[in-house]
Length: 193
Ligand SMILES: [Zn+2]
Image (cartoon, rainbow, N blue to C red; front, side, top):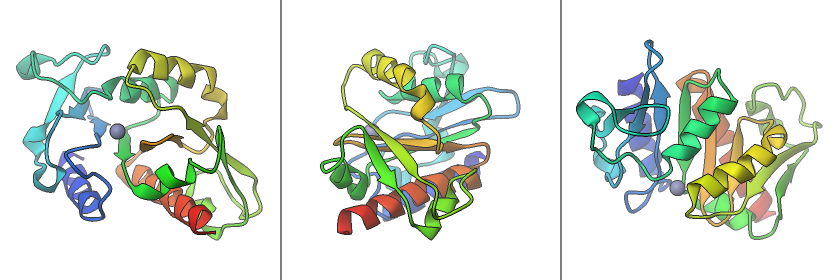
């Protein structure tokens, strides 16, 4: 998993989805240990050594005690707590989700796209989907409280943070990537429309 995720992080960086050392990524290994990307790493040069282990409070464990994890680690922990089958979480600072959130409040409505079937559980382009858009804040506990209140609205294994980017996850790396790319494609279509 670690090697494959490193490759994907570099690919996403080449797309311009993680400029200026931004974004963060995590996965759960076979021992149920959570690994998260360290803070402030240029994603173009990201390596396996740039992951660190954390406990359930987001504090670095073992060799990584005292190492600073990503600022948004609390969001990862929120996702793992609320969607316990999750094994991989991806974050993007791509432009279209940011742009589309300027024209939609609370939700991005999606209907009529073949590609919306990229979300696990969606079987028809006719399904009415609503992707939650949450307000951005630097206060991670506040953001997690908002997510708590809107948990039932999180149906497509992803959400948008206004002016910021997207989070998407899955039970495998393949699935998480599919959800992230599906959401980005739909944001691009909706913005260009
Ligand atoms: Zn971010």
